[in-house]
Length: 315
Image 1 (cartoon, rainbow, N blue to C red):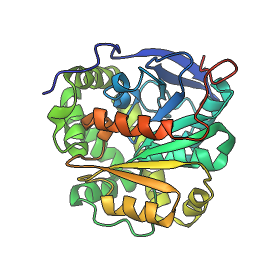
Image 2: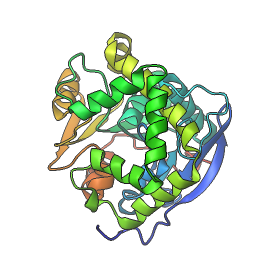
Image 3: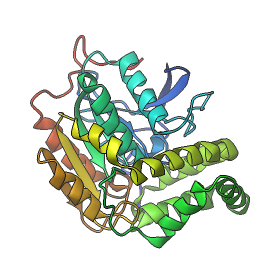
C-alpha cells in the first residue's frame, strides 16, 4: 500500500457543524482563507473522508470543505429523508448558510448527481461543477458490472435489502467493509494512502452501521428511481448553465465510461477528461491527476469562486 502525501493535512480533518434543518457535519481541509472555495460532495455510502487523499494536492491554492450527506459519515438523518432530493436540499442549505458568493462544487458518483441538481436549482450559488464519475441518467447506461447490478437489485427490494445488509454487517469487520468498497471502486486499492484507508476504517468502526445501512438503502433506492425514469432528471440537468468538467475513470465498474461520453456529447459546453487505468474514485486512486485537472480548469473559469472579503465562508 502506498504511503500518504497528506503530511500537511490531518486525517481526519478539522470539522464543524452547520444547521440545515438539522445538524450537518462539514469537514474543513483548510487552504488559504482568500483562495477559491471548493465544496466536495461524496457518493453513496461514502463520507467526507473520500476527499482526504485529494486535499493535500489542492489546499495550497484552494479552500476545500466536504459535508457528509444525510445518514452518511457523521451527519445523522435526524428525521430528514436521505433520498436524492434530501441530499440536494442539504447541500443547498449548507451553501446558503455559509457562502456569500458562488462556489465550485465537486461531486463523485451520487454526489455528482446531487451537485448537478444543486446547480440546476440554485445556479446563483454555483460558479462551476466538477463531476467525478457522476451517476447521471443518460437514457442508455451502457454495460455495468454484474456484481453492481446484483447489489442494486438486492437493495431495491423492501425487506430483502435490509436483510442483505444485516447479514453483510455481521460477517464483515469495519476493515473488511472498507477494503471491499475500495476493491469495487478502484482498479488498484493499494494506490489509496495508508492513513486515508485507516481513517475510513476508524470512521466505519465508530458509526452505527445499522443506521447507516438504512440511509444507504434509502439513497440507493432513490438513485435507482432517478436512473430508471430519467426524464425529469434529464430536464433539470439540461437546464444547467454553469461550466462543467467531467472527470472519469477509464475502468469504472459502477458508471461506465461510455455513459460519461454520452453525457458530454449531449451537452456541448461540458468537458471530459479520462483517467487511464483508474476506477470509480479517481480522487482516492489518482489524487494528483485529479487535482491537476481541477486546478487547471478552475483557473480557466471566467468568474472563479471568490472567497476574499465578502466572499464565501463556512462557519
